[in-house]
Length: 214
Image (cartoon, rainbow, N blue to C red; front, side, top):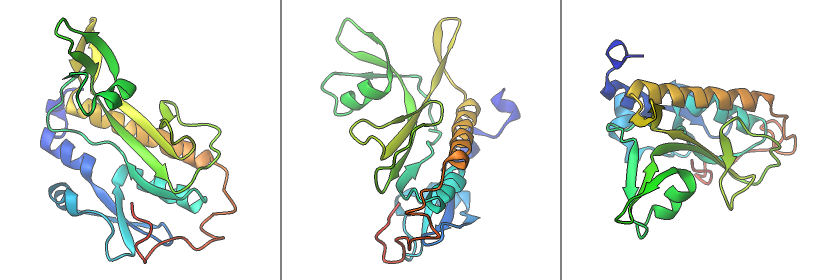
């Protein structure tokens, strides 16, 4: 798919940052926040007046349904399209992000100068308020190490192989991958059995005291 026939890079970046406001007691999601507001004011987005929180638009349905089924969430992210897509990240072993990237990203090579070349990626995640016995996960999703049954993550590579070469995805291809992951997540959530002990109909959920931030 050629980007010339799709949204502009700037629009794809904005689309990937769009938020929806969700009620923190009932987990009903409301109107989408204007994309320019969401994109330009990312640091200020969060709990709104204690009664609503903002959630990435592509995760609104999965997060709403998870909470209604009794799987209470704490924070989440769908993954976002960067303005500049670099297929490879080069790091020294003493880099503060080295351990994280070694765990998450595919190592391509170590050059003669001792630099590590990783196939770069973005991540999405859901952090739950507690551990839940999730016996299966969507394809491509994993538990975050040390937070098993509480923190699920999914990684989306910024590149693909083309005739044996690592080449960057287009912005449209990356956005399509984010959408595909969100759809897979929703389909999985729809099949999850209800956690009756904590479902929205059986227990008051944290909310307007600001204690359940996302």
